[in-house]
Length: 67
Image (tube, rainbow, N blue to C red):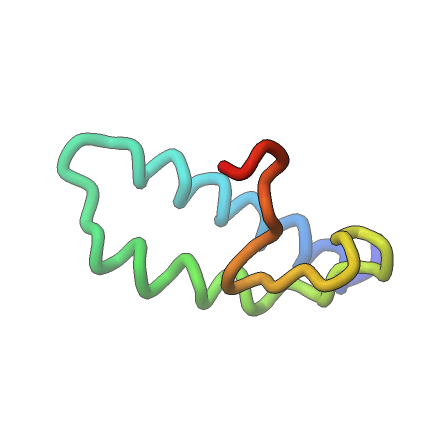
């Protein structure tokens, strides 16, 4: 398997583990807040067409129904 694919899969697994940890009672919010973005930024840019035009990852997309 390509080394980049292995890194991608490993990072996704770590993000999943962090999400599970975040739901545990007593989880360290400071750890989650610092590690989560660091892991996410290491992922490659999404392919064109994955997000709708004008999508802002900071603000997000408008939800249907005005939510």
